Image 1 (cartoon, rainbow, N blue to C red):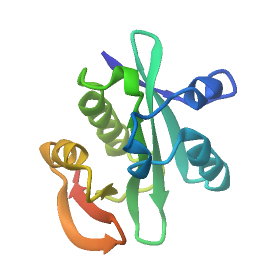
Image 2 (image 1 turned 180 degrees about the horizontal axis):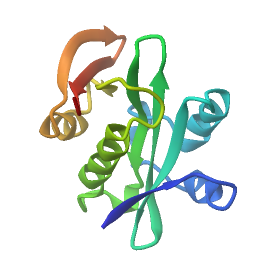
Image 3 (image 1 turned 135 degrees about the horizontal axis):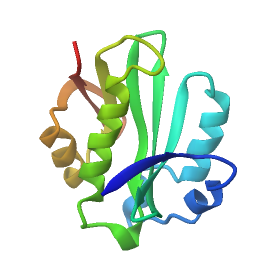
Length: 149
């Protein structure tokens, strides 16, 4: 079973040790960069380790954009040695459960971006109800969904 564990001083080095498979670097930022962003946006975000059986197998950050308003999912990744085990889908389910509790604000809109050349990620997001919005930025497409109500 996959759990989301808040990144703290006790586990941030585990996040730093996560690695992407060759060629995936163009799809997602490493947790080091994401944690720097988490520091900047610390009043509106929560970085998580994605853990399975007590081991950190991935990383994701939830951020609330007060200007839109919406919840955004940033930098979701599963370590190269842990891919193909269903952790990504389970982690996304846990993230959506977290967002449904509205920890930062009352928006029901959840958005994320996906690299155009990453069909596996796009299929995963679509399987959970995300749909392309038509918005694009260079090699990224935006997908969004509405939760709660």
